[in-house]
Length: 538
Ligand code: ADP
Ligand code: MG
Picture 1 (spheres, rainbow, N blue to C red):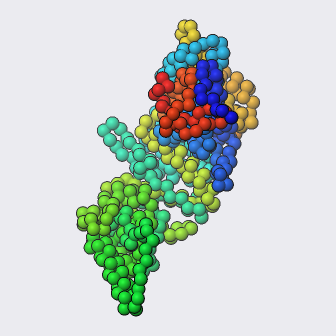
Picture 2 (spheres, rainbow, N blue to C red):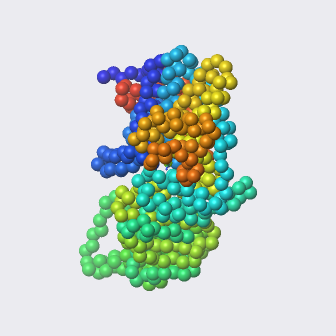
């Protein structure tokens, strides 16, 4: 088959729109607490069962350049707010679909793009008027926010424990700066997961937990006033790249060789001991002989520590990561109040606590099986982020489709004040927003038409918080039902979906370019362009 090297005009447009819509429809059924799960099977046969939009899109093997844009937007949403990843993909799909209707009627994509941009701007304004302020000290509200993010992630049965754990973890790392509170979840909260035990065995540790035990049982189990040495180099001989052999012709030579080896190991160990440290974390291996001397010196040593853990340890203890044993100085040694090995369900771990110069905490997550801990982990991740976002912004909106309906109504009122074709685009944008409550209803097995009629009429009566109770099929006050989300989820989702749609709409030519960006042809003869230059699309 000769692949098409170039697709132009209307064909390129409808092809891109189709691809974008396809991605959106792949995750649409997972939206909301009653969303279905997807089973992802990779080429090795490993499976992941989830309904987390970001995870699904990340794992899907997507080739089409336009479809990839939707995946990118969802990833960005995940990185920026940690939640709303399905919402953003579904909304993009709907915006594309509505744009297609307008294109069919002869409205130029540029006009649609401008209208969409205008609409997203207006959405931000409208949203500001329906937000509710939340104080960072309002623990009850924060727990509800965590709970909303956890709902529908296969972790409902643990919602209470997980929400409480989330809020406790996030509140312990809040930093107060001049321009308000700052929460850096990624940097300051470490999640360590263990299959074994149950969620109730999970704990929040004020410090770092490293999933490793000390390297020898004769080492102390507990070191107070720890002086910590961090090594990224091995305490053993590096294996050479080349094959080499030594010829030994007499027993004396053999002894000499062994003595020499022992001497060198002893020297290596002495360099470690000379640092004055009583705890050593090594990213690589520690030779048994060297370990013997280290253990004799009463040092707690851990080997094969993950690089990311070493970095965290460096930040928390103030120690420098050493790459060469000859470079160690006493100033490189970090400190912690206590380093100890503890027995947890499913094995032993090293706890580093009592660090003065950091806010790092670890959530030690337990669950029955690998799959359970993994889904708890994904739910916890979303929850930690949204709670962090609310502490930073102090603003929430109500969920269950409620804010989307309110936005949709207010935006279409606004559209009627506009003129010409722009009005068409803004009204379509308003219509597209309804996809969220619609999908929530569909996924809960409810009749979307009945539900939408009821929702609209409640909002027209002024019930701004009316949303869908997906469990009972009733339209209720979502604030009273504790379904609340950060404002930033919505503003970010709407804006990002608009950006992705506009970008896709403005492309009228897909060319297989030469060079590194062109790594092959995707299905349907479309060029696979992983490094598509986004700015160039404008
Ligand atoms: P996303 O990846 O976009 O966060 P989710 O599957 O988490 O997707 O679904 C989020 C949607 O579900 C939001 O619109 C939110 O308001 C809604 N939602 C969450 N909890 C409830 C609930 N208890 N009742 C109704 N809607 C809910
Ligand atoms: Mg969510």
